Amino acid sequence: MSVIIASPAGGIALKTSRRRLLAGIFLCLAGLGIGIWTLASGDYPLTFYEILDVVRGGGDETARMVVMEWRLPRFLAALVAGAMLGLAGALFQSVFRNPLASPDVMGFDAGAHFGAVVAMLVFGGGFFLVAGGALSGGAVAALAVYLFVARGLSGFRLIVVGIGIGQLFFAASQWLLLQAGEEAAVAVASWGLGSLNDMDKSRLAYLGISAVLLVPPGLLLARSLRQLELGDAIARGTGLDPGRTRLSAILVGLALSALVTALVGPIGFIALVAPQIARRLTADGDVALVHAALAGSILLGASDLLAQKIPSGMPLPVGVVTLVLGGLWFFWLLLRSGRVGTS
Amino acid sequence: MNYRLQLDRVSAAYEGVSVLKDISLVLPDGVFTAIMGANGSGKSTLLKLLGGAVAPVAGKILLDGKPVSALRPRHLARDIAMLPQFPLAPDGIRVAELVMRGRFPHQTMFRQWSAADRTAVDAAMAQAGVADLAHRLVSTLSGGQRQRVWIALVLAQDTPILLLDEPTSFLDIAYQVELMALLSELSERGRTIVAVLHDINQASRHASHLVMLAGGQVIAAGRPDEVVRAETMRAVFRLESVIVPDPVTFTPMVVPSELRRNR
Ligand SMILES: Nc1ncnc2c1ncn2[C@@H]1O[C@H](COP(=O)(O)OP(=O)(O)O)[C@@H](O)[C@H]1O
Ligand SMILES: [Mg+2]
Image (cartoon, chains in turn yellow, blue):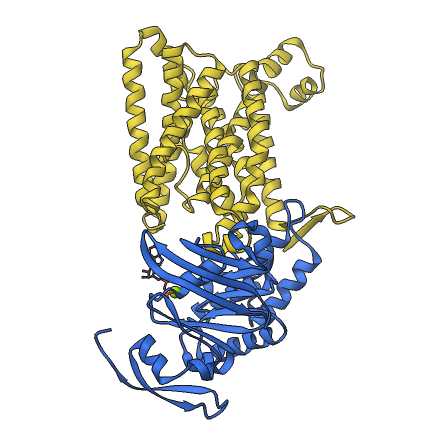
C-alpha cells in the first residue's frame, strides 16, 4: 500500500508505504520505551511521573541531577551513536550489496580504532586529533579493502579480506598499547572497548555535531542507492553516476563510524545488524536508511541498558555487550540459512 | 533520413584488446535498427558505447552532434534508455516498484513521485504485458516474465531512443513475436529502437535497418533485403545458407545449408 506525502503545490512529493510508516512508528515507540526504562532504573529509581516532572522543568534536585546530568546525556549519546552506526552500516551494505558489509565486520572500525590510539598515545589526544586519527585510520583500512575490490574480489571472500585487515589493525593497536605506559594504556583500554559510562556533555555535543553534519547527507543518498542496487548498467542508464554515488556513500559511512569510534570507542554489531533489521521490517526491496538509523539507536540504547543491568565488578562497557550480541546474531544467521556464504 | 545518434570513427577496446575498430554508423530516427553478429563480436559493446556506459578509445559518439560523454547522465537518461543484458533486481521488490525505478531521470530529490510517473508506469506495464503481475514479487517470476518487467522499466523511462541488449532472451516464441511487434510499433510511432538480436529472420521481419558486425567492423548495414544475403551470412557466421522469401511477410529468410567448422 503506497502512501504519497506531498505539498499542496506539488513541489514536494515523497513516496513511502503504510508498512514503512508503521515500522517507523514501531521503532520510535520501542526507543521511547527503552528511554523511559533507562531514565527510571538504576541505583536511584524514579517513577514515570517523577521523570515527567523533571523533563517539564520541575522535580526535586536529586531527581533533576540524576536525570539531566547522568542518565539523559548517556541515553542521548546511545541514541545518536546508534543512529550513526546504523546508518553507516546501511550505506555500506547497500553499496556492496552484501548484508555482511558493515564497517565493524570489514575492518574499517579497527582501522579507525588504530588511528585513534595513535592519536592518543603519540600525539596526546584531544577531540580533533583523535577524530582526525580515527578518520585517517578508517580511510586507510577502507583503501586496503578497496585494493581488493579493484582486483575483482567481491561477496563473501571480500568480507573475509575485510575481517583479516581488521585483525591486522587490531593487533597493531594492541602492540601500541603494550608499548605505552601502564597509565595511558588503562585509560585507552576502557575507551577501547566502547563505553558510554563516562559520557559527558562535551562529548555528547561533539557527537551531536557529527551527527548533524553527517546524518542528513547520508539519508539523502537513499534515492541514488536505490537506483544503484539495480546494477551499474541500469543505474547509469537511468541517469545516475554510479562511481560518484558509491564514493559519497563510502565517505559518509566511513566518517559516521570513525567519529563514533573516536568519541565512544569501537562498538561492533550495531552497524551490522541494524540495517538488516530495518530491511526485514520494511521488506520491500528498497533501501531503509531512516529505519536503519532508528534500529541502531534502539539497539545501542538497549545494549547500554543491558550493560548497566548486568551485575559486574566494574561498570560494563556497552561495546562488550554488543560484541556478545553480535556473536549470537552470527550464530543465528549461520544456523538459519546457507545463504550467508554465497551472497 | 534524420538521425540524432551517430558513431563517428569509433574504436573500443578492453584492457588494450581491440573489440571494435573505426566504426562509423548512423542510427536513423524513428527506425527499428537490429544489431547482429556472432557471439563476442562486440554487439553489447556497441550498445554500451551508444548509451555512454563504455568510453571509446578513439572517435566520438554523438547525440544531436554533441559527444554523449559530455552530457550529464541525467540528461542523457531522458533521451536514451538502455536495457542491459544482465540487470539485477533487489530482493523483496515488487514488479510495479521496479518499473517505477525507470522514472528516476524524471524525478528529483524532493519530487520522487508524480501523476505522470504513475501514468508512464501503468502504460509501460500494459505494453510489456506485465500489468497483471504488478503486485508480484520479482523473485517469484519466471525468466521470461522477469525479462518483460525489465522491458517495462525502460519503457517507463519514456525516452525517444531505446537501446535493448538481447531483449528476446528467455521469452517464449509467442512473447518474442509480441515484443518484436511492440518494438516495430514503437518505432512507427516515432521512437528510435536499437536492439541486439540473434534471430535474423525475426530481425528482417520487424526491423527496417540491420547492422552486421564481424571482426570488429560493420560488415553490412542497410535494409533487410540489402543485408540478409548468403555472402553476408558466410562472412559473419561462416554459415552456408539459402535465402528465401519469408512465406508470410516476404522479407528475406535464412535457411542454413551447411556449417563451416573451425570458425
Ligand atoms: N568488461 C569487459 N572486460 C574485458 N573484455 C570484455 C568486457 N566486455 C566484453 N569483453 C570482450 O569484448 C568482446 C566483445 O564483447 P561483447 O560486446 O559483449 O560481445 P557480444 O555482445 O557481441 O557477444 C568479447 O571478446 C568479450 O570477451
Ligand atoms: Mg552481448
